[in-house]
Amino acid sequence: MRTFETSDWIFLNSIIYKIYTTADEAVMRTQFLEQIRMLVDYDSADFYLPDPTDPKKLSSPVLYNCDTDLSKEYEDLDYSRDLMCSGKSLIYRETDIISEEKRKDTDYYKKVYVPNRWHYSLQMVLSYKRHFVGVATFYRCIGKKDFEYDDIFLLDQLKDHMAYRLYHDEEQKGELSEKITVTEAVAKYGLTRREHKVLRLIMDGEDNEKISEELSISINTLKKHTLNIYHKLGINNRVQMFKMIRERE
Image (tube, rainbow, N blue to C red; front, side):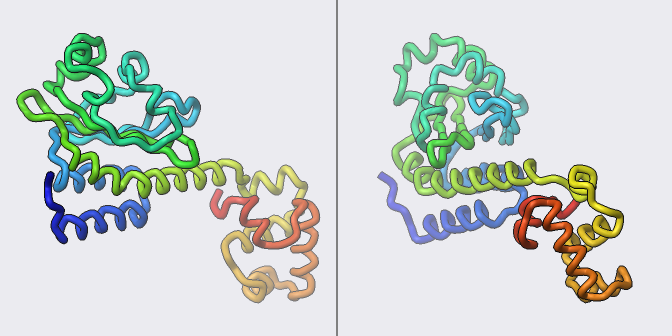
């Protein structure tokens, strides 16, 4: 068994830091595949998210040394898809779930592995709160040894961090999709032209003094317009307003 040096743990912490701080989720996944190769030897990899319209399907691939989107093949042929939808984060080798003889005789092996000269794989299934959020698969080519326990151990240190990040991103996308734009709010709730301008400036983050100056109205008049907007939208304060309406059109 490999002895993990201080430098290994420092590098793991660096990966975890980037999982949480890289704003663009696709860039984060790409960086993850590139960085983990410093600790886990592999030849190719892919990283998929669940399809928003059907969580049992895969979409949004990020690929490393692999040019083909294999989501259709996974959907039709992959015999391990039940593990993907188990609601648990898992790290496993394909050889842990099916014998070598049976594996090489499957359509999945023949149509996915053989054309790419892959032979072994290590899969990282990611779930949070029993909700599937992504799957990364690492491949080794013919002629190399299978992945080892050390590789599983390393990915196991990262799986919960990655699952949480992807779940959090999904939540944010859901909140954004439920919000309405200022223009939609004006049409839906019958806001006046002046209320429209007040709402727009509030959503732009302007304070009351700046809004009053911009519209040439008193603070008291602005408060009346704001209360009218609250009443029409069925809310009580600006916090609820920002939860209901997008900051940008």
